[in-house]
Amino acid sequence: MLSAQQAEALILDLVQPLHPQRDLEILDLRSAPGRILATPASSVLDFPLWDNSAMDGYAVRYEDVKVCSTEQPAILEIVEEIPAGYQPQKNIQSGQAARILTGSMMPTGADTIVVQEETRRSGRFVTLFSAPKPHAFVRRQAEFYQAGQPLLPAGIRLSAAEIAVLATAQCTQVPVYRRPRIAILSTGSELVLPDQPLQPGQIVDSNQYALAALVASAGAEPICLGIVPDQQESLKAAIAQAISIADVVISSGGVSVGDYDYVDRTLTELRAEIHIRAVAVKPGRPLTVASFKATQSQEPELPHLLSPVLYFGLPGNPVSALVTFWRFVQPALRKLSGLADDWQTPCVEGRSLQDLRSDGKRETYLWGKTHLVQGKYEFSLAGGSQSSGNLINLAQTNSLAVIPIGQTLKTSGEAIQIMLVMP
Ligand code: AMP
Ligand code: MG
View 1 (cartoon, rainbow, N blue to C red):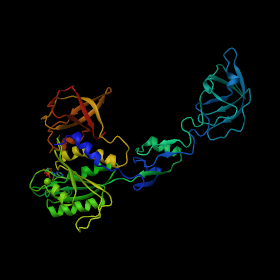
View 2: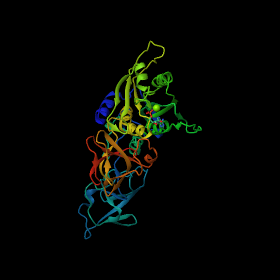
View 3: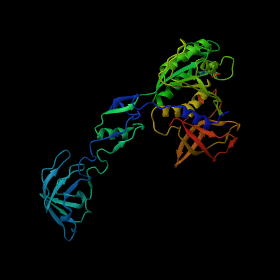
View 4: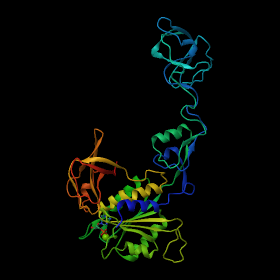
């Protein structure tokens, strides 16, 4: 059986990222937060655009003030006031200064700012008692960015700081990757929608909701295709529809070895190549990963595919479905979305407050809550059962403690790896 690391590497290898031209859309900057930049950004504007003052004070010529002191103060005539948004009109001559406010344009002739606190003003004159450093508190044109240079690379997620940079560069129409389309379906004749009455033997399809939430928070577009009963023909029709409209299909249930577990058989009938059938992880051992090639199908029941489609058949147990999503699907969606790197779900080193146990045969994930305490990550195991059928205590957790294969115990206080799944 594949190890988690082997499965992850294989899956990432199968993912073809969205195409920077074919899968591009142009968005207004206001709609761009959270999206992935598809084309490198640059600007025709320097930053700062002109020399300006970093402080409230006086713009002076360094030559005039370089030797001043309490005993020998410099007295300069104030020839202009330069508030924000004003273009200076005067050229500062020897013996002159301009009153200037933070961010305002430096007047020509001046090269240094003397901060207000170092001066005394009386009417049209300002007295300086100490020499500033040359060019003090002047932010030079293009000091932080030179027009025409690369500003932001492609493949980054646009958060507040990048949005601010694009706004400053007057890039208001932003080329981003479209959101990947992810079809989600639930398999199981026992499943009903959450708003339907439950008959004996029936349970609510919670996976559809959980997976849609996970897909949306990964920046992709969930397309919920509903519940498919355990009948091969229904499943075949549902998967055929799903692969014809999505970049990735995620189903849950029907991948174990039970009599009604039709997913793998159906994928084979639909000409998918199955790459993974099981991974040595707990929870979540039965995990199917398959791919469909782009094809012009001649057979009526096989859809035409314009681009390849990746298929994840997750186990039906609610906890297993979520854990396998975090461990294997999320990195794939990140790579698919156009992100240039950082695909893996983040892992940190920390310590557990309780002993953690595993059977040692599979990489084991235990759910709980991680806090940062005085700069160190502390993991606290969720109370109650760590059964993959127990969805309830997964709520209000944010992380999975990882016990590697071959280890059966991590005592409290021992260093462990913690996967941060809901930061
Ligand atoms: P399966 O993987 O189909 O054998 O399902 C394993 C367990 O997960 C069974 O107890 C199912 O009833 C349950 N299950 C399957 N699909 C879902 C779902 N969509 N929502 C909640 N539980 C499910
Ligand atoms: Mg089932």
